[in-house]
Length: 589
Figure (tube, rainbow, N blue to C red):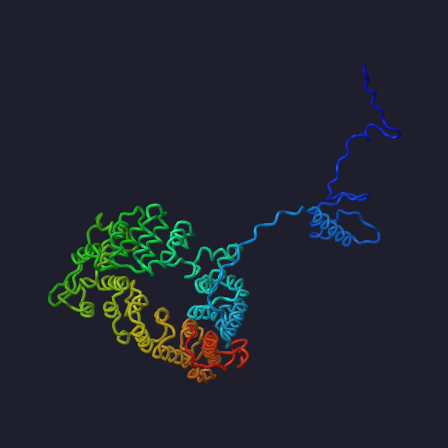
């Protein structure tokens, strides 16, 4: 039998010394040195200062606490880095897609870099000073560049996306210029995620030769990508767009159905009527209302006919003593009216009968009123007196109908002659809800500009700002001349120019640059009339100098985009503030 020898204690040791020793982590183990202080303690001492918090490190007589703290931080950094274990390499991102579009001309590329670099500098919202506002020129440059089909320089893509992130009004044009590489970058940087929710331009939409790509994007794409796809398909092939929407309509969310339905405005035709009639029974009230609005924009639709029958039952022609339009408000809003988009509950302060009648009139085809009023033209109908103070309500509803149905004859009749009214409020009476700017948008561009020009000549600029906003750019010569003349009259009256800063800003964006030379005479400081605001002459001089400088810079920008300008020649070429440019170049608006 073998016996186990008894345990013995080695010489010069005690039992306690044989206990397992605690292992010091490699990151802190250092022969002959104390344990490293916690990084958080070092940071706290640094933030509070060594005079208020003694660093948690040994101090020597020849070293200050601050130096000891820095030494400890350096040693701790080395230790932490030395303890890191190498990780597996991440998957390399796929290369950015190719962009076959031509590059920007050198001068235009330089101009874009200047505009992007300055976008946070001069755009403080002030209308003072004579220098052009480069912040406002950036959207104009982007819009002009779209016409040429250029691609953005790769080095400027981050700055371009940053600019679009900060200003939503820049996004469509900026993303179109940036192209598919903007979407590639946005997938790598959350700051640019808006590009994935917005449109990537026409290049992001599969073409008709790629039906599988269309189907995959519709079923798997982000919501905004699907809206963009549907809109593009409606422009290209309305029937194909409607067919694509029909494949998933029943499973879409209510808010998505509303947006998709709104996209059907592109290419709207009678072929869409069966689908829209079914949407009148949708469980969402907003979807039903939008479907009814679209159907009422189709004068030959069954809904338009139903609305005409209802409207004609309440509006007719009386003959006592002469021709007069008679109006009788509806007494109820039945289920049929509600299904056809008539909202039963009026807004606060509006009578029920007037509210229901206005909706019927807005949706009824305007052509039907000719027969209802014995073959009279729109102008003759509008000129008829209206009984019982219904004129404003009736005409306002017809204005909305003219906008919805894009009927230029009715819009022309309801606008009337711009010079006949004493003020804009007589064109749109007090209490009226009509929108003259929307009504003007129905007219052809040339006629629209001429109407606004005559209105400004007769009534000045105070009521014309929104009307100017719907005029085609660059402004036609009569309109531009009328605006400048009105600004000159305001200067002669001695008022301050910032009272007209909105119109002046529009003029900088919309006037034809060819007018710059003609406006040079307005840049001089004039004598202030008696009773004028102090210093108004100098302020007006600055405002007109800025206007002329901006117009010339727009001409230069256009020349650079066409490749006919050289940034190395001409005064102010680098900054865009010089006058050595061709002022007769077409507008870059």
